[in-house]
Length: 231
Image (tube, rainbow, N blue to C red):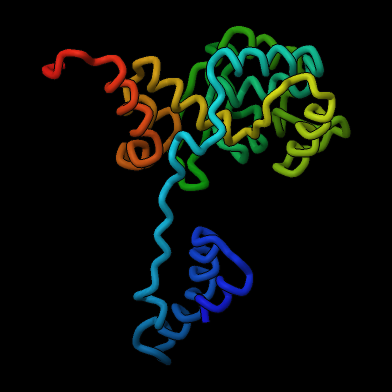
């Protein structure tokens, strides 16, 4: 049945994994009530390999700087601080749009992300520029980033705001907030960063997840830079 659903709708394995998990909730209920002894979906597993780094939309540090310049010229006090937060923290979209003032320590220049969406809690340093822009915001309670209508941002609302910026054609590359997270990771490793430090920044539960997603960037740097095999 799952194969038929996937073939008829041309669904990717990663989506099928979600469908399988939802259906399996029903079988878990039946098992709990002792109506069945085992879920018939137990043996089914959709293995999802991470995209090769070359297939991802990775922005170089120079491209990120050009993007930030374009966003600052377009919307210095509204959209720019949000995008700046993405480039500095490599946070997920949900973490940024749900950020509250209680998570900020502007005196010391830190932001704390809570444990959610399969990521660990962590505290990260912010640039002086970003701290200054956040200080300028009049609202000091509730959501840090709000729309023009004083409503908390959501992923959809942020996408629309970014879409309005893109239609101005002030920047020549396509990008998403997720691309900024991937770009941060790849650029960090390419510049010699430690993968354990990257794991803590991204909030991965263990370093093996980080290596699975971004180990290729570390290997590429070693191949290009290391001459003596004993290094």
